[in-house]
Image (spheres, helix red, strand yellow):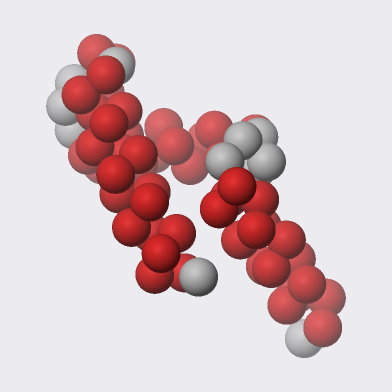
Length: 62
């Protein structure tokens, strides 16, 4: 799932870089913006929710 999720995040970051002036077309700033949103609202996108659930279950087991 990690590979698919990172591919989806790449497309989201490219969209954010085009859509919002605050990131000024910078892919790195778009990724950072997405990471802040992901930490605030992990259930916003389905792949974020699945990955967050999976990370929590692996940290509890290990």
